[in-house]
Image (tube, rainbow, N blue to C red):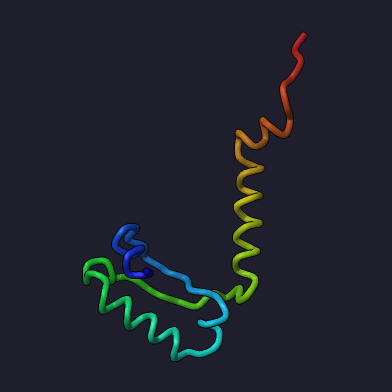
Length: 87
C-alpha cells in the first residue's frame, strides 16, 4: 500500500507510525525493503522512510493540526465571525 502511494504522490519523505513500527527496528526495515522492491526506482531515488517521533499521539496531533488549519483559514475565520452588519 505504501509503494502504491509513493507511485501516485511521489513524496520525498514518508513518516510511518503506529504500534507496529514502534515495536521493532526490524519491522521498519522490512517496510523499507518492501517499498524499495515494489516501488519504481525513480520514485524511491531520494525517498526517506522514517519512524514518527510523535509515537502513539501522531493521529491525534494530525487531527488537531487539520482542525486548527481549517479554523484559521480565510473561510474558517469568515464562518467564525459571521456576517457583518454594515451601516
